[in-house]
Amino acid sequence: NQRDFVGPIVVDGTGKAIHISASVDGVPAIDMLVLRKAEAEQSLQLYYEYPASGPLAGLPMSQEVLPQGNQLKRAIVVPPGTYYVVFDNTPTAGQTNPQVNAMDDRAAVVQYLIQIGDAS
Image (cartoon, rainbow, N blue to C red; front, side):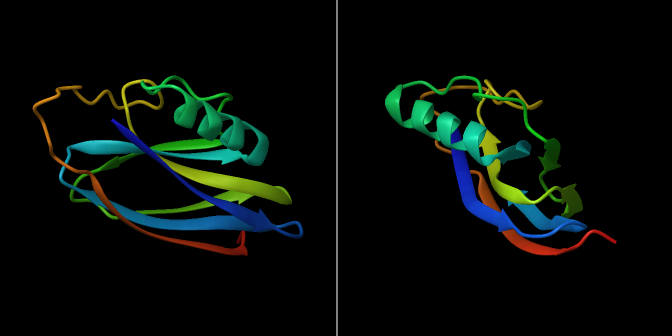
């Protein structure tokens, strides 16, 4: 029941993409979402203030399910701006619905590389 925010990621200029390579181990799958700065920072504030994770403060620009055992490689074309990549292992955002069990201490271990480059 954890959510990690990676950012801020600043993209300058047009024709750029956020290139993400990621893999997960320890759980069947997690969600990877890309949010604009305003929605991400508001979501992060809500995540800090409330004891249980809730929905995100806005719609993601991109979302993917990151299954265990598969290397995800994506180029997400974005306009100039500031973004966050969110790795979500909660039942309140994204498409996955992990079981919430107080006796389950499995950790989702995510390895990732995020780069900014040309969209093509």
